[in-house]
Length: 333
Image 1 (tube, rainbow, N blue to C red):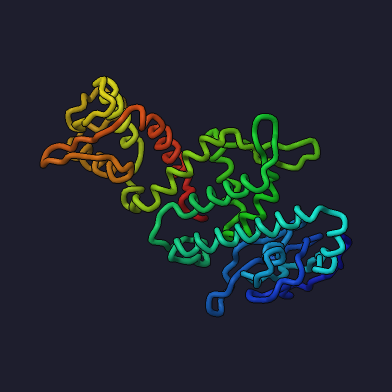
Image 2: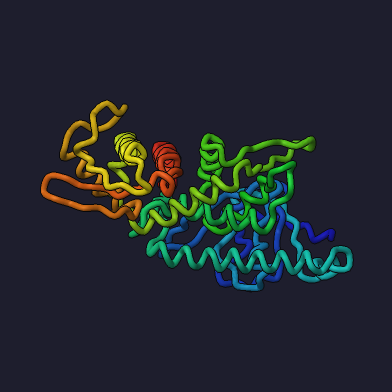
């Protein structure tokens, strides 16, 4: 599949939003800008450099282009037309083409659903205006899980994804910065969910070290997105985790399968446990809402009904969330 080499002048538009997708392109040398128009302003979504592929999603699912692309410098590209690709079909299995088309369609559908949920849009500085918190985290986790399902390869006892391929799909679907994706992967490494490795050819791979941990955390954050307010997320921190750890410890000590724990009556000898009564009540009220706990309230007390067996992973998930929020992954920079 040789393709046709083209030279774009600085400022030349490669394609526009709404154009039909008759080709996809590989950047040989230079820089392309991916953007959309907001009035007369260009809102930059990403920059693509040597080796990047652009226009492949619309090419495979045969839908109109979803963004504008132009050259920021004189740029050399290879254009792969549909005729070029059809010639390639004689050399590769048809099922591989079908899989790529299916993946493009699923990712575009996922992207559309997420965009509808967001009820907002990107500003020129990439800030997310939305009624729902945690959008960047939720969206990246969902895309990562979908790509693992479709493209992951066996790597020992684990699964792995090509880093560059994953990044390009993520950029196509979100338009957010490469820096955010790199930071996200680094934080997931810190959480023990995945690792980033280089193979003998020095290409980088994302190795999924704990699929269970990724699945649990994804489900937790996705569910939390519809329950947690921006205010409660801002106040969330180690005190919340300490209180819930103390609640679970008291429930375990009771010997019952489930136990109603009075939060203000918990002894103060737990590390990090808030001593102020009103602070405990406020945290307990938020935790009940976040974690869908049954609670009993009076004017001076809140009892949280917990099950040590059912909630054994909750403290870990809260600690993971605390790390993610402290790393500012809930905002695009």
